[in-house]
Image 1 (cartoon, rainbow, N blue to C red):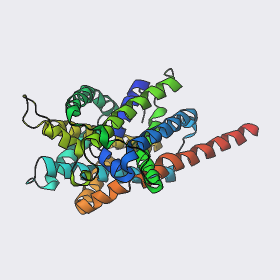
Image 2: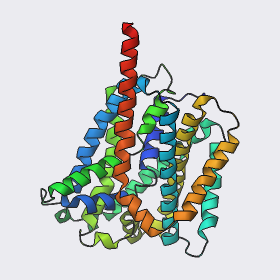
Image 3: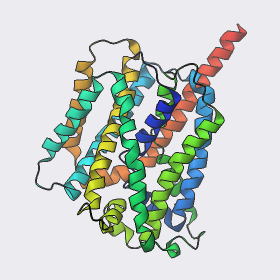
Image 4: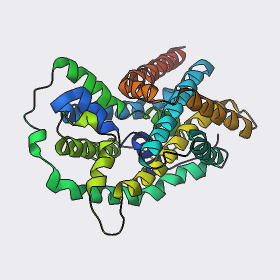
Length: 344
């Protein structure tokens, strides 16, 4: 695929790819895994990911994948797409429509994604711009819950066990799943757009403050013992906020989240398009149709609460191999090969 993006577009796409879909449910996952120190674990994980991105920037030229590794990534992304769509459908059933058949809403969401996937790359590249204003609106209205927040739920710190720290930190790293997209998209950035250490720091600080705010707000709003009984705590907090212009604030932001998630879904599909069509394959409509059909069959075949909970509880285990271990192996091998060729 031949297209170019600016570094601002790269970071916007990465932000929405990373935060989309999971951000309303992620705080609950890490708090239940890490205990009272979960919010600290997240910031530690973010610090690790910052240096991971910095290394990506140094080594991205060596991220050249072959057919076998390309299919590993495509398979992984398909699993993520299926899990994402199941999660969106699950929340639709809980918060909006209980009587509409799952197949109807699944088909509608996949049709939107399919249309975007067969359009020009600029379509999905520019979509995140439309969600930017809603980020600030979302944060502002969530701040209305401040009178209900309690510092007692954050402190004292240092009470989590070693096992909780290990699992919580791994889940903290999994909050940034999707940053392998940095390596996929980085080569499409305009050559004159140099990405500095400072710009990576600003990006990582932005996404850390956003997700960290959600974790801390959830932690301060709910008692730890009550959190397992709540479905999507962020939406529950919004539901408790009373405003004059809309009866259910949670439903209003739910549809914002749904649009946000579809954009994130489409950005994953874009990664698949880039990797798949790297071999100069033609007829993009048929492969994209097959991809969406596979996702639909996967969702219909396994859409249930047990599978969803399994995927949420094991998110960290498929994050590390794909975003840390495999890219490191690919880049180090290619760098070593280039060094040997230079010596010859």
